Image 1 (cartoon, rainbow, N blue to C red):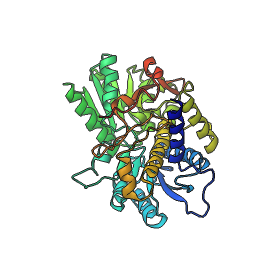
Image 2 (image 1 turned 90 degrees about the vertical axis):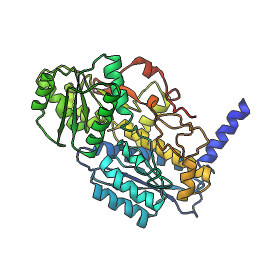
Image 3 (image 1 turned 60 degrees about the vertical axis):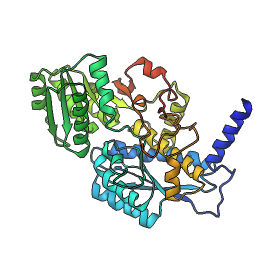
Image 4 (image 1 turned 135 degrees about the vertical axis):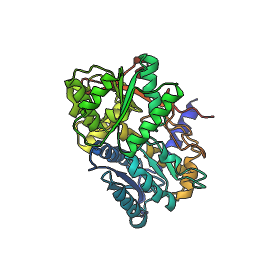
Length: 406
């Protein structure tokens, strides 16, 4: 047993390209990191993507880089605008010569930007955008080989977790659905309606709104008149804050539930006391009882010189995406796109330092989603922090929430 542990440790160090020192003569390995750093209503997401990548950078270069070469991050701001995302993607491919990419926070930006990397045969692991079509759009038969992977929870999964909470656990079946008109909100609405239909239920109200809209009073009044017993939101954090704040002023005391965007600091800060009790579907919750989670959080704060993580979920998912890329490059013994892509589809080594989960074969030829249903949990806002909504989820570590392989 001791020999096996020692072998595993040596294998892991080798997987990171550990050599004691980095070969200064070799050029660095350039990995792109892209997100909405200054994007309207998406800054939490972009800053956390970049911040999580910087934690990885410090860790990997301290261990000797990858394949004996230092890693260099090429950071870009897509401003939450599709045209900017495409321009930045082309710059990474044509000018910076990146070998892989992580990030992409918004579904509307991820789709056209990922296409640039797909056509250049450069692996991209989406660590933010959750639209179900983000990976599906690049799988066969659309493309013979897909270079687009994901470590965030697809919107095909989050509605299931949300409705498991609202319907199965809280016994509520009269639901009002409010969503924004962005691609993210539209795809979220479609997934939510599909899951309700699967359960042979219909929402009592479905209404949309524009991003940044300030008055939600009429929509909430109609939700109340419809007999809604709970309100599900599919929108970005600040818009969700507008909804819950208006509900508070109206003394509309209904359960308020949404996707992972309700875990963003912008939602918690903007909504204030109105956020208390709101629930959110997430893959990661900062947990000081977990040594890995705690160390990641401490490292993030130190390296990025901040007091808190704007989106702990996005930061953790980005860190894990880069860890998986590092393992793939080791396994392929190469940074060439096609070889890394093949390695990602058949990773043979368990991860030991990832944050969201201990991954084993997270991807396959037919499945480029690292996150499975059992890996998404319900969080709840309590005293301006995200905590586990259910004690049993808190007691299960990331090892228990591991994707089942066939």
